[in-house]
Amino acid sequence: MRHFLLCSLLSFFVLSCNNVSTDSEGNKLATSISGAGATFPYPYYNIVFRDYMRQHDGITVNYGAIGSGGGIRSLRDRSVDFGASDAFLNEKEIASMKAEVIHIATCMGGVVMAYTLEGVDSLRLTGALIADIYLGKIKKWNDSRLAAENPTIKLPDLEITPVYRSDGSGTTYNFSEYLCVVSPEWDRIMGKGKALKWEAGIAAKGNPGVAGIVQQTEGAIGYIGSEYALTLKLPTAKLKNRAGRYVNATLEAISAAANVDLPEDMRATITDSGDPEAYPMSLFTWILVYKNQQYDSRTRQDAEQLVSLLQYIISPEGQKVAAQINYAPLPMQALEKNRKLISEINYGGAPVALNISSEPAGDGVGAVLNE
View: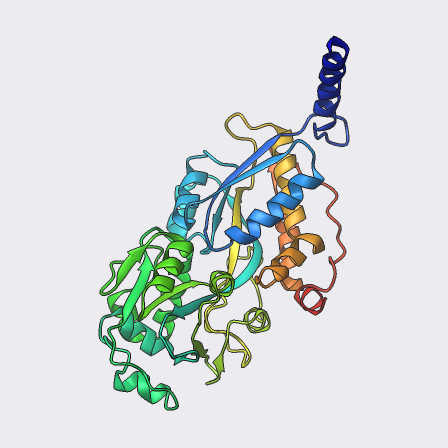
């Protein structure tokens, strides 16, 4: 028994040593990376972080899906290594960070209008109708304006229950930004933001909370990430895009929305895209990190491990995961701009990037979707 225990103890120490990740010079790297923020990309992050950990022994990636607003605050407080948001930082938020922040787009998705309405498995909506529902101007499903948009459907004489986010949310920002574009009245009364003062409806926390209430409430409608609706098999409305087409939030339609010139800092909106095939409420989601990683008690090794994680997310392997779980992978243009931004991350002025190839990683979204 003593011999067995001794062998077990020795095996434990050997495994422990093997589970320590090191850089090219043999220095021990960080063993834990922490992040917090958007609930929209959580299913994707849950898998891509798990896959990264499996390939990097001894590394733990912890992520708290607390909403985009919470992620930005956590990064500002420097209580996490990275924040995550479905809305890029505005000028006021950038100033509040007190150091330059880089936006790394990780994938794309859509904000869909999920609903529960017995006997109705196909619904058409316009941005103006959605705005009036959340402004409390359209109260019943058989409203004449809804009926006019859906002439082949018998809509019930039933109260509409709009559901919205209670937490600071990038999904809310993208939803409200779209409505500001298509509804002057919404723009005047509500505006856009991560948190709003709602005119009608009930609140729920996070994408899962909104999806759960919609699923359990007859006559409810709510805006959620497309992947939640697909996972829960909730019916979602076709939205009328700028070209006048009614479009579902397919990966192809979301990808089409990104057919625009993207800025170098990747702070881009793809709402209400002019592409005739585009889904109108499409969005990027970002991981936010400080450009200079030399702050507080952070080491260069901490910075290198964070950069390694970012590289993995935008790699062909990481982007393939996105497509597999109903997120649209990034187009080539976004991947190239991401690589440049990652190469700018430094530690006290010294570059941190590890083995970033200048060659395109595959053919971007088209190649991933066609696999």
